[in-house]
Image 1 (tube, rainbow, N blue to C red):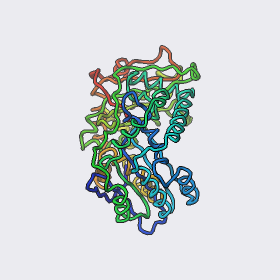
Image 2: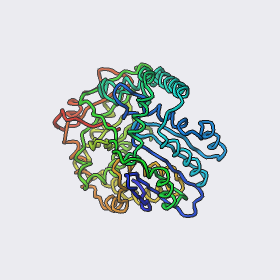
Image 3: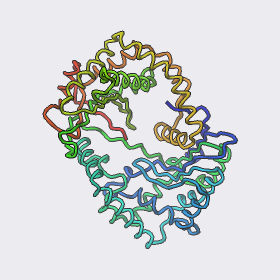
Image 4: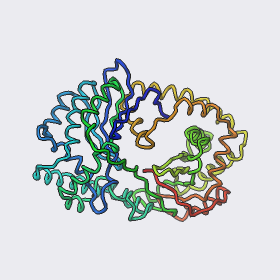
Length: 448
C-alpha cells in the first residue's frame, strides 16, 4: 500500500523525470538523483562497471575533490551517500532542505561530468572496489548466498553474479569501458530526481533543468528480472544440520497480477492468509508449533507467484505442512469458520492505511524510497484512493476464489535450505499433499 496523493511529476524534454512529494513548511527533505542502471546492467564479462563508475563520480569534476565532497556532507551534518544496487545507482541525501540541495548540487556536477582524467585515482578505486568484492565473496555468508542462488536460478543467471562485480573482471576494466558505460547510462530517459519534504516542485524542476536538462535523451534501461528454473531445490546449510530448515512452496500466480480485479487485493490476501497460518500453528497453550507466512510477489518482468514460507524442524515438518494445507484448502473452499478472521483483517485496512500514512507523514526517507520504487517499476503513481476502496469492499467469498485460482493453476516448486533430509517433498508431492492438481513446467519469474 502506497501513499502518493500529493506527488507531482514533470518530465523534461530529454525524458528526465522530476518527482516531488512537497510538504510546505517542512524543514527537511529526502532527495535522490538516480540512474536506472546498476550492477546487473554491466556488460557481459565486464562486471563491476556500475560499481566502479559510482566510485569515480567523486573524481570526475575538476574543482570538486572526493575529500571536499565528504567534508561538505560532514559540515552540513546530513545523511548522504552515493550507492549502487542491482538495478540503479543513486546519490541520496536527507536533512535540512538547504543543506541537502547544496550536497546534491555538488553530486549532480560530478555525475554529469562523465570524465575520467586521473589514472592514478582510477587505479586506486579499482583496487578498492576489487577488495570490497573479494571480501564479500570470501565471507562465509556471502559465498553461501551465491551458491544457493546458483542452485535456484542456474549458474549462468545474472542473479548469481554479484551486483558489485567479480574481482577478476573488475581488475581488467579499462578507462574506455567505464566511460562507455557512463555515457551510455547517464542520459535523460534513464534518470530521475525524487524528493519528499520541504523542497517545492518548482525548485526541483529548476535544479534538474540546470544540471540535467542538456543531457542526451538516450533510452531507459529495463529493470532486471531473471527467470526461476522450474525445478525443486534443496540446499544444505551445515550449521543448521539436524536442527531446523526453511521451506518454500511456490505457486505460479502471474494471472492474479495481470488482472486489475485481483492485483489490488493481494496485499489484503497476504495479510489474511499469514494471520490464518499463524493461528493454525498456535497451540492451545499459546506457543507456536512452527512459523509460516504467505506472500504474493511480482517480478519486474511482470510474472508473479504466491509463496508459502515455513520454518520447521525435522520432527514437525509434516505436521506443520498438514496444518498449512488444511488451512489453505479450508479457505479456498470458503469454509465459514475463516470468515470472521477475514472480516477482521479487511476492517483493519482503513486503520493500516491511517497508521502507515502517519508514519510516512513523518518519514520523508520512506516516502522517497516508495516513490523511487514505483517509478522504477512502472513510471506512474498508483491510485491510492481506488486501491483503498477496492480493499474495503472485498468479500470473503472473493478472497476464497482468488486462493482457489492460484492453488489450482500449477503444481508448485519447492525450495529447502538448512537441514536437508528425506522428509522433504518435491513439487509434485507437495501438490498432491495440498490435494491440488496443477500443470507443471511453467516458468516463474524471480523478484529482481
